[in-house]
Image 1 (cartoon, rainbow, N blue to C red):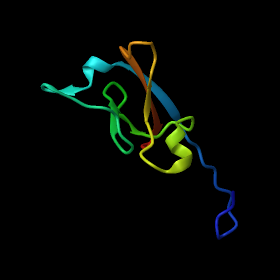
Image 2 (image 1 turned 180 degrees about the vertical axis):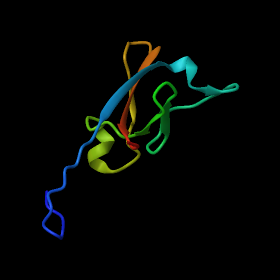
Image 3 (image 1 turned 120 degrees about the vertical axis):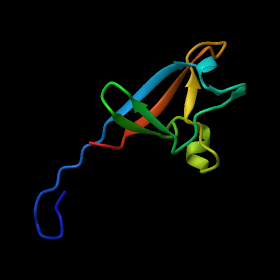
Length: 88
């Protein structure tokens, strides 16, 4: 890719899937689900990831409310959350 001044610009994207216990996604007694734009902060590295819709979600093509996670097992005990790194 080239900028307006003719310099070459390199774009990099880092995507990551987080697998978490669905029971851990709660604030007090209220259970929550990941939504587009939510942030995940990796405390050890201070990396920040933004939750994105899964490209395989049927809603992705329809631009309705896209699903940003999917179950990893039949009972939904673990879920996979798709995200993109947003800080350097």
